[in-house]
Length: 505
Image (cartoon, rainbow, N blue to C red; front, side, top):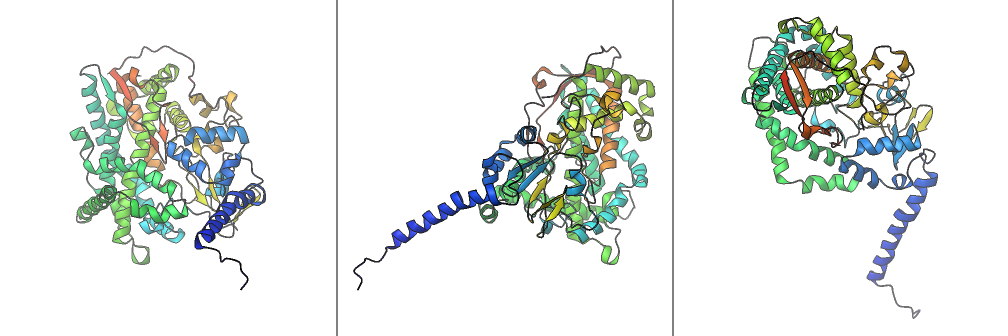
């Protein structure tokens, strides 16, 4: 016998714990800071060591501000995690989102868009192409022409309801809610063959209310799923109420799709497009159900958000309001003359919409991609596999490196004004780029043009006192957590005072 006591299990446990702590706190941190392939990219040191600072930023709802600050300090490319890079230069769009010859696609991470959901957003490449091929019929120029009477019907009802509200009390209306009512009714009709009755009832349908109740929770859940351990634990600790709500959303969507498919009369909607596939190009019932629900959400909330932001920016910039009102009211002598074709031919309106989307993009933060296992070449650098890549839209759009007077709302920059000839307009891609860009871009622009034109033609409006700091108070996740926007509506008048452009903080 050696005479030396054998180590106790407690001692072994302490030694193992210290070894684990030493590995994660010292060795792994040192590796991430000085040896990791991304170590050459600038960024805050604590963010390079751990994913925790990024998660805390995202959960705080201030990503749109913090990412802009990081890019202002560190430049065009910032390391925002041990395995994550953020880009704001225009060339990054094609490098990250595009499909480049000779290079693999940078797919969407599973924790962000689960391919098991059977929808176009997260579908693998071949399935995505099959779904998009069919859905494109529902968004074609021919389909848009056929859908115009449907769009006009809901916009007419929206304006009628706003007229009623303008005549009562102080005329103060939460336009954010009314935009949501209109667009959910419209997209419900196109996605399910039936509207939600929001405009008729002046309230959110329970199905729509369920969606809003889960947007923030879903976003935070996706962010936390980036941590391997939490990805396993989250489904186990998810509140039963949220699980029931998710099930209810899918159940109601299935019922609506089934009712629409039982209708034999052809109509130019998304269900008809999705059900038109034959043979190996056909969509399964589960794929039709999932895509109908995705279209109902993505095709309404984002456009309603864009409309709310545009209304705020127009109303807080009297010079812009005056010029836009002059263009709209001179072009259309009668409200009944306002149609898609005419509204699409108004250059200043188009400039206002683009500038609104630049200042207030509906998706303000990163829509992440991830490099394939073998890595990829991004802007001349070989980026290792499984690196998260992103372009935070609002940070890119409000950067002086891309736009002159970047924080000011100046629609003239989109009208070939010489002052803004240096603007990097190729940076502006609110609907993304590449084979996975937003399929509903034409519909969204049509809705924006029609509703803004009708609003400006019909009303004079100003921001109510309680909403003067509406944009500054907001939080953001995958989308804006925007809250109500109260606007005072009154019968239209052409008396405007010309003032300078305002600044956005």
